[in-house]
Amino acid sequence: MKIGDISYRIKVPLMFTLVILITACVVTLALTWRAYEDLRNEVFNNAVEIGSVLSNSLPNALLHDDLWGAYRLVQAAEGWTGNNSTRLLIVLDKNGQIYVSNRPKTLPVTTRLRVHGEELARVEAEVLRLTGNLNPRPYEHPNDQRLYVILPMLSDGVAIGTLVIGYDRALFWPRFTDIVKRVVFSALVVTILLLPLGWYLGNRMVMPLGHLARCMSKVGRGNSEEIVCDLRQGKDEIGQLGTSFQQMLKELDEKEQLEAGMLASERLAAVGRLSAGVAHEINNPLGGMLNALNTFRHFSKTDDLGRETFALIERGLQQIRETISALLVEANPRSHSLNPKDIEDVRMLLLPDVNRKRVDLKWYNGIQQEISLPSTPIRQVLLNLSLNAVQASPEEGVVHCSVESRNHMLYIYVLNNGPNIPRERMKSLFEPFSESTTGNGLGLWVTYQLIQQLEGVIEVKSRGGKTQFTVELPIKEFQ
Image 1 (tube, helix red, strand yellow):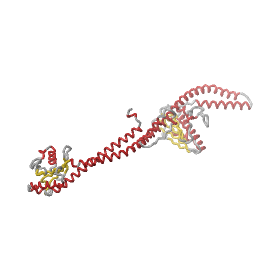
Image 2: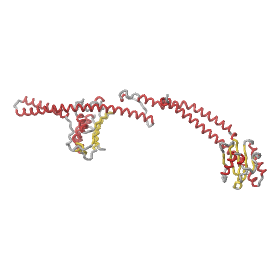
Image 3: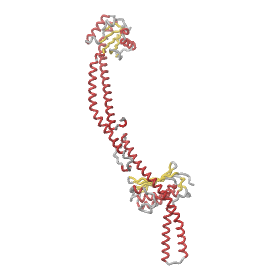
Image 4: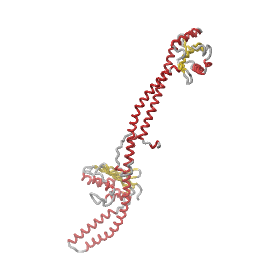
């Protein structure tokens, strides 16, 4: 099995475990290094204390060239500590030569440090490099057996020699090892306590991902509206993932509606072509029948019953003509260009219905100048959508109507707070003679046909107690 195939329910806790182990190692190393530094500083402070005692008496011996007195002082300093075999004391004169040491046999006087091995040669180089520095300073090299402290010996503020104190590293290895053992033990105990906590927190973090994976597995197996996932939404990555998934479900639902709309559009186009052909075939004999009836009524003598019968027939034929005329929708390009006054005219036509229902009409006319679109179909579209919105709104409801143009497009927004349109009704919303509480169901059919002829699109959203129609029309020359 590949690592990438392992579930995050296992990988994330393992990562927590790895982080805890790495942290424990880093903390252990840091504490170990700190213990080493503390021991090193302790050695340095001890050397400074010894050097401060010797610096009060050794300068006088150097000034009077009292070699034996200097040697006794060095032997006395070595005896104070009781570590004769581990500490090295060397006094250098102002020329850098050995004046006296606690190892007179191996470090004879008047010799240079460099002749006694690489380690002391490096010490001499450090002494020469820091000539003029009157402060005590530590020195160590990874390859040396000792840690050194270099202390200038002063007389009236002038360096007359240098005291070099060397401590064998073996001095503090037992203490250092003991400290390391305690640090490692403490880190191990803390790690054992943190591992179960890390595993628990890792599982808690991955639980939303597992829930999301189960929800995503349902996508494509049914209607997206039927997928219900209680995903946590927030500003972190998992919360944003939940938000994105919910947005994806919403877009899938809109895509399904768009596909249904496209199928409906194709069906409407076929019905439109059939309706137009039938309407033309009916209109021709219908016009002849009306002309014959009119001629017969004017040139024939008949009683009152006959005249009433003729009037009844004429009204019926006129009603048939009006119904057929509604099916012959045509965006007449010979109308004048759309201007702000046309939009306001529609508002005036709406006012009687608005006042009758006590609807709050929020009207926005964003047209500031003449637009290259035929005014008659635009007015008809706006009027049909606005009247439908007023009729769908409850008593004292709110209707928003907005018309604006930008980026060579005309946008019409009509929104009402009436009941949502049922999903089943949305599928046949723009079909002629569809189910309608008022009228013959041709208003939205006419609107759709006009928008199609103007190469525009119309969208409907009905959710949360609000229904909005959005119309987008390209602005171009029509004359």
